[in-house]
Amino acid sequence: MERNILLTIEYDGTGFHGWQRQPEVRTVQGVLEEALSRVCATPITIDGVSRTDAGVHALGQRATFSGDFGIPADRIPIAVNGLLSGTDREGDLRIIESRQVPSGFHARFDAKGKKYRYMIRNEENMAVFLRNYRYQVSETLDMDAMRTAASYIIGEHDFACFQAAGGTPRETTVRTVTSLDIFQEGEPGARDISIEIAGDGFLYNMVRIITGTLVEVGRGKIAPEQMINILDSHDRGTAGHTAPPQGLYLVEVYY
Amino acid sequence: MERNILLTIEYDGTGFHGWQRQPEVRTVQGVLEEALSRVCATPITIDGVSRTDAGVHALGQRATFSGDFGIPADRIPIAVNGLLSGTDREGDLRIIESRQVPSGFHARFDAKGKKYRYMIRNEENMAVFLRNYRYQVSETLDMDAMRTAASYIIGEHDFACFQAAGGTPRETTVRTVTSLDIFQEGEPGARDISIEIAGDGFLYNMVRIITGTLVEVGRGKIAPEQMINILDSHDRGTAGHTAPPQGLYLVEVYY
Image (cartoon, rainbow over all chains, first blue to last red; front, top):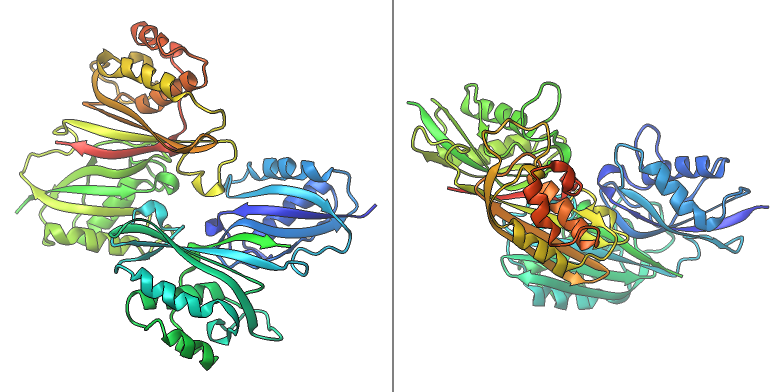
């Protein structure tokens, strides 16, 4: 009998060429499909919610797959994680949860929203250990200015200005950002700044371009109020740079 | 004119087969000597203080080298770090400081002591991002018992019980541990435990075996007072397991 399974997946994006299966290179989808096909003893194809780019991490990626196989849903994590732990990148990908869902349920199409976190290290000489997990920014960022700028982004807007070329074509560039919070830990001179952004959907590279733009606000290169004009322009050229992939984490998918 | 240079070096040990130069594999000494030889335009051999094993990290490794070359000492970090940033492991090794020292000064022979930190993650399901930087221990550790056990280690002792086979032969296994502090951050259920240990010198794998023994004390497998008997035995077989390399950091060298 055909069953439909929903997975929750955590990975360190450093060693992957992104989510999406591609020939010859190591991708999250590729590694998972190979392991699941062995564990389920039948060829498995999975659909993930977020096609994360190379270097982007996930704490709670979701994916569905279906098929006729024997293994109970709750045994899949231990079986797959056991297989993966024998590889050269031991431990950079892990299924956290697996459960059976009604047939027809689809991880991506049924998602109501997502939350991402972008982590900046605001420090002049960042320790080498953080290089794959933070975006290093040397100049002390003005948190108040960044928070003011962020307030203009919350709500329903046409976010064309924050969309990079090269993603899947979309019917509309209107999205709703339901929250955008900026947290900091540590003292000026060495601090972690997290930008947490939740919404009903995100355009290609949208979180990274929003982050790059907020960093330029923090540096004083863009005035916080200019965010209104940037949004109104619908023009990628008016927004800031694209922050690098290694600071980005897919945190949660909402259903 | 021959000059003698003292370097301070930081590295993520994950991508290295340890400090010591070996043919065919990537080591910290090998990568540094190659880059320094290019920057100094003459073959350079360096002497490091601690021959860290594969996977072991350093915040403040020290090394000396000498030769007749043109580059000013304080330009060496930027030149070497620039060369290294073009490699596939971009950013996992960095010279933090470089300064000229009197001829005859030797990073290792003139060191008065060293400080190491060992980082344990006391949590049942550790995030994948920490796998190369912490030793995961699932069972909640008894910090009081560990601190009592640690108190017996401080001072001058014959530490033969904490020496692994395979290191450089030593004249004596007597060493002085000047401090051993155990810190913790976070709540039971998910916490970082750091063991900081300073002393005039360390035997092969000594910090990792002390850590493994303290973990067994924390688990209730070894009574804190048994540390006295372990030290008196001079027998590696009486001590605990060797904690894995990825939790170990060389923090500082004292002169």
